[in-house]
Image (cartoon, rainbow, N blue to C red; front, side):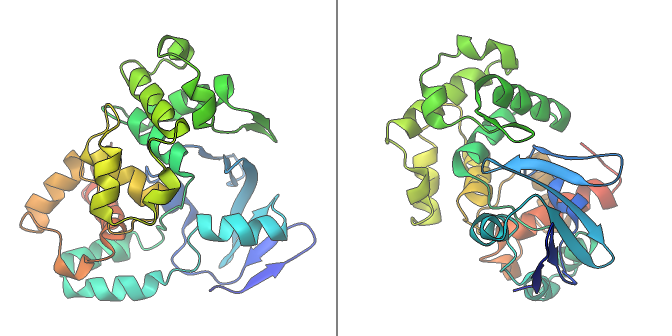
Length: 277
């Protein structure tokens, strides 16, 4: 656990390692974080708004109470996981280790499960700027007003709508999938919180019951929303990387932490190879 100082108007994470704000907040695992002209990141998660920036080797958080930090943000930013140890384990595979070192500031965000599920339904056949726009319109039109913006709408709120009602967010074919997910979650047919307690295979098979949810979207929801760090979402970038750099297989040293390895590999093939989505 990092050393934390709770100051009068800010929270200071002392000399934090393996936490780069840009790599973590803008790597394609969450879509509601932005950076202002002063270099301060800001966003809403779990119905709470905060701002963050780096000061020397410390991370500064503005707008959070001590209670919210301990009960929400500490888990959200995965501050209790030893990423340095995980990266050392990846050294058994040189390419994976190189990828991990190049993107060692990425942390897996522990997002609200329904938001993660909907976000990656929206991500299908889409680019990041458009994903962000659709999600922002979804929140503005159907989420509750909160400090500095709108919360992500609940499954209950969306379950009362039709796909046609989502026309203002301009999500195209994805609207019917969002509504189906909302109805299944709101009715209790799918208990997203309980997926955290199931095996990866059991949890994935349940999510695949939602219309429009395939293995990649299910794995993203499990990794970023349900704490299944062993989930390994495969899009075209990852499939290409596995073929070109790893002989088509996930390295054995990534077992148990495949989701973290996936983020390192994703960053590596896009940034280090000069290719960007």
